[in-house]
Image: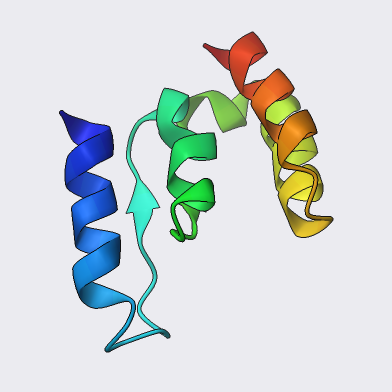
Length: 75
């Protein structure tokens, strides 16, 4: 599925091109993508939900537990 494919891309591309940005196109994959070394998500729900602002803040502060809590709300 999408999470394993994205994880595979991250593993193939990031080591050689660390500046290359990889984003998910699925709102419910945000936490998975950033925990796998990706850069985030182009989330449709971010237009109407403050939860994505909170998730980005949690990721930037290295708080993956909080990121996963918010991801569950989004899901």
